[in-house]
View 1 (cartoon, rainbow, N blue to C red):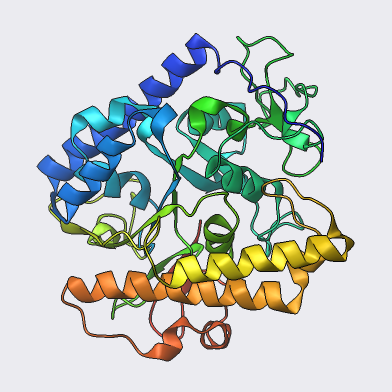
View 2: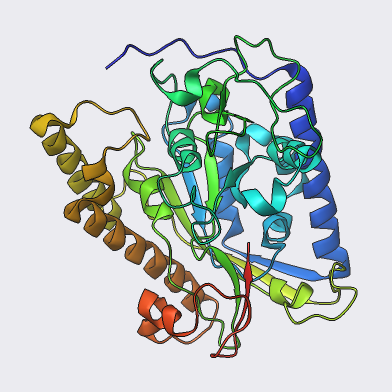
Length: 383
């Protein structure tokens, strides 16, 4: 394994100011909207804020943070974070990173700048792009955001910036105020160029929010789709087990219902919404996720002894991607994550859902790659 490079300087001051401005503006508008034009209640918020306060000092962070929830509205993020007091929106280094559709929110340079400054990274959906799936470059970035840099010089995101398409129609961006030798980038498809957030020590052990359903799902019984495997990579692969906070959100689907009439882009008002925060089920706690990580570590070591070599954080060989044991561990981890979200769902007062709701086979019967009204009366939007 190649020795790690020193971590580069933080992103430029203008870039950091821009990120603070986007995060603060979005958070302020969202909180004002959710607490004036609508009603938003938070349950279990105090403990979550205590956890965020413990993470303010970047240098003293010991692990990453994952929040995971159901997905019921195209505006869940940022609407759900209207529960956070204003001051939390002015500190991007202690705010969430999210995953956004490459073909939706990274269509051109303007959108790329806004969402990148807003701490969103571009992801491809496998049913729309051959570059999608749980092993795409952005998932490597996400795993590394859960870890501590520096990484080795052999990794793609530790190379000096590649040429950027200057066309306004291109999604390519980089920090224009950083020297090329310090502007670390990566590509999601071998063509585009985006800043590599995990290269910087100021992003170590970051907070990532993820919607494992992968799509908006508005069901009359408030059930969830099956969860995708990406969440398992974020739990199993980082160097330290992240804190894991399961969440449940309600009411946002009434602000932006998928069957809304024109003007469709206008959020509805006068709705009652809620956000529930569950207990931390990750970190140093004894439990299923710690056991699964131990099994993963053993699998990685066994692969190394068999000649798989020492792999950097976020990098997997074929055996660790597609091997039977690796696949089984991801499936089990994903199933337990969904179970923890269901536990918080139960806290909100809802009855237990039918266990088959979480099966891939159930969703395939409803046409897993369609949008709109499904056979089970749910409304689905690809996001």
